[in-house]
Amino acid sequence: MKKISQTGSVLISVIIVLPFLIMIAATYMSLSTTSLRLAYVDKSHTNAQFATDAGIDYGLQQINANGAWTGTGGEIELQNTSGVRTTYQLTVTDVDADSKTLTSIGRTYRPATAITPEASVTILVDLRSITTGLFSIVSGVGGLIMTNSAKVVGGDVLVNGEITLSNTAQIGLSGNPVNVEVAHQTCPNPANASYPQICGLGENGQPITINNTAHIYGDVKANNQTTTTGMSDPGLTASSGVSAQSLPPHDRDAQKAAVATTITGAAASCNGSQTRTWAANTKITGDVSVSNNCIVTVLGDVWITGEFEMKNSTQMIVDNSLGTTRPSIMVDDPDGAEFSNSAKLVSNSSSTGFQVIAYYSRASCSPDCADVTGVDLYNSRNDITVKLDNSAEGPNSIFYSKWTRVQIANSGQIGALVGQTVELKNSSTITFGTSIGTGSTYWIIDGYRRSF
Image 1 (cartoon, rainbow, N blue to C red):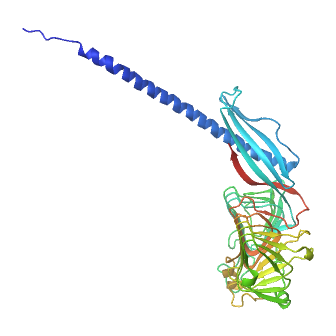
Image 2 (image 1 turned 45 degrees about the horizontal axis):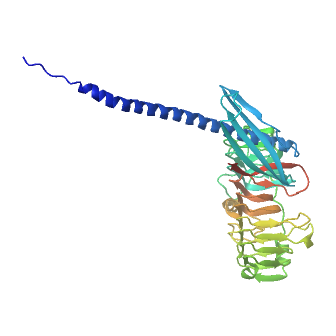
Image 3 (image 1 turned 90 degrees about the vertical axis):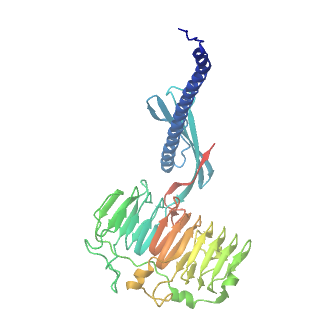
């Protein structure tokens, strides 16, 4: 029987393959270690971001309590658990009398005894001061609608219809509550010739609806309201006895009768680095467009029969000769008045702004109706005839939709809003106050940016 020869070839294969197996195992171990380390770093960065945000909230609270507050002077420990420590540090820098920069630095230390942070996040917050006025919003039967992060800061709120708040919308501040009155004048539903009337108990629901984390800080009086959720300081104090109020008066007939000069919309319009002066008691026929850095100085009341549009860093200025007399810009077109892209209505040296009032309605007598009621008013309440968007603003100015809706989106300082319906949305920096220079001063966030 012949013996089979064995040469040891398996040993050679093992010697060749084993180092590769070891290398692969080592690579996987290294990747696992790296992934774990990155996960810890990412978690530390998230914790640092949370600490930064907490610092901003704390800083804003301190500045509103003391306008001269300059910061924490060092790190404030926020959390120290499970071997991880987070802190925030705040510094306040004055830019000018109405602006500050709040710098918030959040840090994460791991382990908690470490001297050097594992992660750090720095946020620069631009703050702007606002001063409370006597009132901010007067709304008719269409009510007040607030969404996203819109806020009413300072001034009382009077609503004939209903209030709907959602997302993080807010009326008043915890340190500066306001007075809110709601008449619930939304009946009958569906509307008929007797519309509007104040609803009876149990008729057409409750007048205030608050969703998500929206909140009202103030003394709330609302007919037929029983739900108190989302209200404080002191919240709902009365659920009946609120009377419906007429919207502020304006003598349209007198302004029309006083017309001394008539010009075309083309003559009144301007584009680019131009200037225009509108004389007192002027009637402008047709559409008016003011755009691209144009500046218009107004010497008194103006009546525009067409659409009025201001956009792209334009300015309309109340002349100093008017003193404390507020000029009215009366607009008749169904498209009303629109202000956008940093357009600004500028007050004079007496802090006197404009009244922009739109008169269109669905009634056949529009725009010369002495009154609009019934189905015509119900159908008109949601037509937008005054609109501000994209950083348009008018400190000390009143924006007034007589029979329709005024809508504010992503806008800056505003004196007051009046309309059958008032809608605020998107912006977290909408502020009010027609009497700048009196009352209490509060600081709000005007910008938020990461520093690397």
